[in-house]
Length: 121
Image (tube, rainbow, N blue to C red; front, side):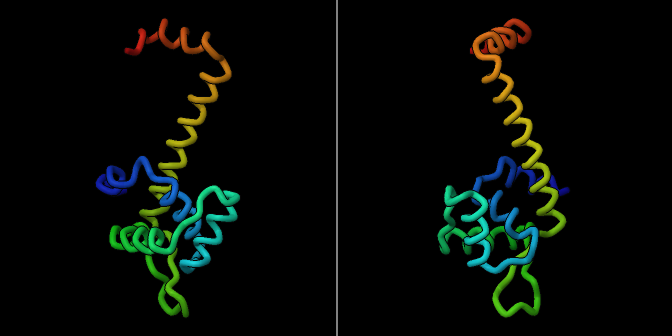
């Protein structure tokens, strides 16, 4: 995968992450908005201006592409986009595991980390 894309998109904003999830299957703009709204149970609501600016940039960078022959402008994930999505999902998984480990262990887990690696100041 193109390292320049990694540097540009990782870590990823939530809006980009969910948009990429939405276009794993071809979707037009309004369908992307609806999919993200449903998937996040209304936590993330994409505005049309935000969405179309973002998909323009993602398409220009080769992360998504338009589907030819569609009545409405429809987008889908490219191989490069899938690579970014997988990398970001793995990064988020590791971040979640670290947080859960520390939160589950409470103060003793933090002290164990400090004893092992030194206090972080």
